[in-house]
Image (tube, each protein chain N blue to C red):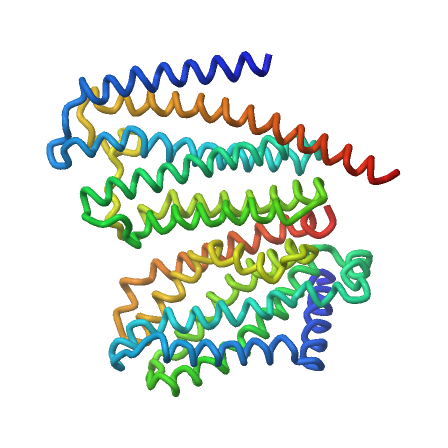
Length: 225
Length: 227
């Protein structure tokens, strides 16, 4: 119970700080819009083809825009040595990590919930009738991005090239989760048979469980030593 | 002593590779469907197994560092991962040459190939991370953690053949339940594996020595700057 309370305190602190400044979410939403614009120049597709690749486009937007939020996650604690203060406080590394994970998760979900309808309008894609399932895929895929991103954000926080290092390190690591989420989103948007693609749900869940446990076990080593 | 071991391993590995090359090109017949190009498997598969073995040993060495905080273990981990990365590159290159002849293309985004490529990118990231950190203990700590994450990804690579549909050939070795090679054709592959393991051990010993010297030079440099 104490674990949860302190974790939520960290998450609330991060969310409050973001709501006041709005720097990461604003940058992330703007970046998502820029990517949406760039895609329109990169592809000149028929509506049918757009639906086929919509899963890939959506998750590229989510992953790229999400990185901006993840990059700020630990970096914002560098000012005034806040990270050292947090580490010195009676909050364990796992609580700090999990709290930041929850805050990042909510922020990335907000960006996704804004990007999804904008994407649907710009590219004339009818959102699937099974919208709840698409939302479930977003919940699962985003947790994968968040947990890996937050862990690597902690690893790269003190590096000079952290803005460069984070995407380089996390995108290859995220491939199984992204592939699963892309496939499921594509199937849901095109109205394909879901039963044949349930393996991707299992891949997503396995990815999330494995890397959440691993991150919680190792984050203390990363942050404290 | 170290030099003697390196020399012995290199000579033995060279001798086995030369003897095996002779066997592969003069005694092993062409494969019925693929012809002569199938012989690339004698280097492709051993290089892949060597790289996988190395990545795991690298991880164990990293975990050893996390437990014992001995920087020599980090040097060993970095050396092993570097040599394994070289063998992984050999695997991708030999596979690509085989694909050009059999599939008519250098590369396809098949699940196993993609996973292997992902694995390469993760280890490129591993060395980028190492280069970006100046403090040896932080470098060792973060590299070890990244190595653990990378090895979990290798499990996905290894299992991907069962999870995903693929155009990569199915398992042919008996040990993986394949049984697709004629008797006598599989033996040179395992000899090549042994030779490549010895070669990688020699290379790791050389790289570990270099890493140890680098640490020593860094320590001397810091000492000099302190004055």
